[in-house]
Amino acid sequence: MLYWLVETFRPWLLDHNLYRFVGVLETQLQFRALAAAGLSFAIVLLLGKPTIAWLTRMKIGDTGATDAEALKAHADKKANVPTMGGVLIVGAILGSVLLLADLTQFYVLLGLIVVAWHAVLGAFDDWLKLTAKHRGTGSRQGLYAWEKLIFQLGVGLLVGWFCYQQAPPGSDDLRHVLNLPFQKTFVSASEGPSPALWYLSMPLYIIFACLMVSGMSNAVNITDGMDGLAAGISAVVAIGAFILCFVAGQQGWAQYLLVPFVPNAGELTVLAGAMAGACLGFLWWNCSPASVFMGDTGALALGGTLGYLAVVTRQEFVILLMSGVFIIEIASTTLQVGFFKATGGRRLFRIAPFHHNLQLRDWPEQQIVARLWIVSVILVLAGLASIKLR
Image (cartoon, rainbow, N blue to C red; front, side, top):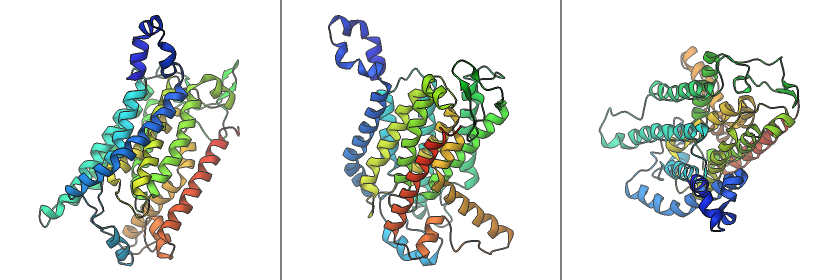
């Protein structure tokens, strides 16, 4: 909105010698992206206490439920801590992007839809879980997995369909490229795209989009089981995505680093910055011992947004590497469930997801969280380094 106001009233601002005070909002994308990070951080920090108090008054607390008797004491400690704190994260992201991004850009508008869609889905799931005990025996404990998946795949379908349309269908455009690790997408600025690239058809592009958006959404949601774990890792990965969005949207940088150039994707640095700032602000309230949990409301929105940024920038493999902890978490759960069903009740691991397995090995929760943060920082650095190894 501020970008639009400055652009609209530029002649008047120039005539009154005021443009020099606000021109940075129009000319400096980096400034707006960093400002979005700072603003979203401040929003979560300032509104955290009253929001937590409101959630407590509404009795929106965690049930403390766990699927492992060995972790029952751990779960009891977290019982009745307010959840649905994801409204803070989502509200800060949406507010910052609406204020500082160029809202005429398609990728920004679709990104806002992805955030809001997942937040509403997560909030509905949270609400069903939290009100089940008030609705009597037999009430649903949240959405069924297949119901959630339908809505996640639905937004993935929208992302795939509309993002593919941003380049002429069937053209050899880098917005349709399958960007493999260590692959040169530009031979040089003068020679243009490499003829050896693989370009995705619309059906394949949509499949990639559905898998990334729904998969990352569920991965972050599964990881959200310890104080500060999902929020901290999301902040780190969002910073990596911030850099990828900036590079993808600048033709000079994209060609220098031999990665896909995606026109107008640079504006998504505002969204990535807002996400990083909101997650860091949420850590203020979510670090151990947590005063609030993000719930599905925040976790689904964060994961879905990371998947969306990966699709637009054509950096699916790099963001998957950066999100290695998330991938391990969802892989451990998927393997555990599949093995349990295939063997009629046997378990592959003592417990899933992975962070609870570490807990059963007598690792303190704070140690698990700190070490997985460190692993995520290393993975993000490795992912960023990989874009230069061509």
